[in-house]
Image (cartoon, rainbow, N blue to C red; front, side):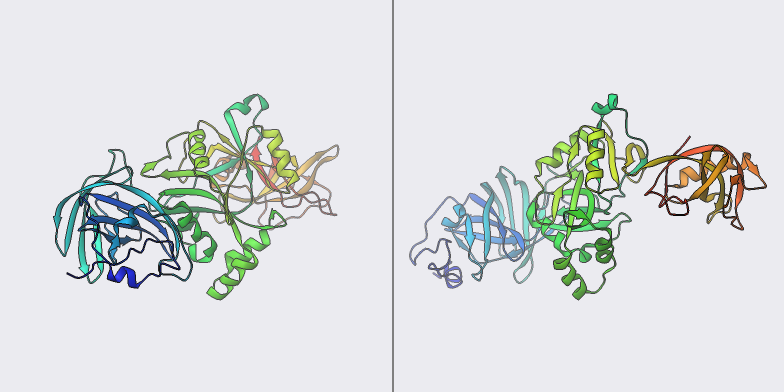
Length: 462
């Protein structure tokens, strides 16, 4: 009778690997009822499913792990038989050796055979993490597929969503200190919004519009193997740190890079960091409808700390968080209601973007049309003085679609034919002037020598 472990022994040198390499001789006999699944961090992460059979462990390498959804089959590559001693092996196979990398036991338990042929193996697994009826069926040569024959593990189990449109904040003031208990505060890093989908040890990075940008940030692929068998959807910001602070210029350089050679160079010269602040799905459970507090607790348990990712901290006090943001040279903070769910695709007042820049009350004296001629594309603003309203600049940032719709009828009711500004003020050909009765708060970066606001952003209308 042929030695079932001949191939196994030929591929390994007991002097160079900690794996068990039994000598020739009779095989130990078990009851053909035990299994082990090992998480194998080799060149590519995969899970080795091993079933005790005839004195050896019959083995398949499953790149994405056993499926939990009966609607999805996973590839399972039939590999060489392993010795029974391998069922207890954990360790690091040296680099350069066959299967080099870390090996840990992911699960083990008993199994029952329902059918076993050269082309089809049906089993019922009874482990701690792997439970249910599975069938391995041969496709060609060593390539098999594995299919879950049972329903999903729990009635409320859900597959990971394919896409998620991120929730957005609205601009607003810092919540009153008396309300601090109902709010959590996070830094506004000024990065690129990104949603990361992790399944089967693979990570996919989508931008806010749902486009796959994984290839642009190859250093984030390692987040998949880091999370192993965890299935999750993460929300956060991509930043490039320069001296410990986010650099908008370096991030724009990364975002605009297209060629593989440039991407490889910049992934070393200007590596990105993914700052995670929300968890939208975890291991078959959608978390969109639960509170921010519960989502953060689940996120913190994942312990996301790595060379290219981190969990963005959450603070209790708004004033202290805003001061910390200013000390770091950031744009401000985002206040989030602790009891709020995650509102997919919505700009919600449950998240409030609080600017760390100086704020100023301005008077609206006119506007210029945008793409829709009936709606304002920019506001002409000034500041009240003893002599009237002195022109202070043009505000374009912060004019959301909702703000434009709200503001348009109010501006039409205040229409006048001449500029309300005193002294020297521009007179755009398409300017629509209004009586200076509306005021608003804007944030800004100071003043130009000729008395104009730098980078004014609308925060709120009065």
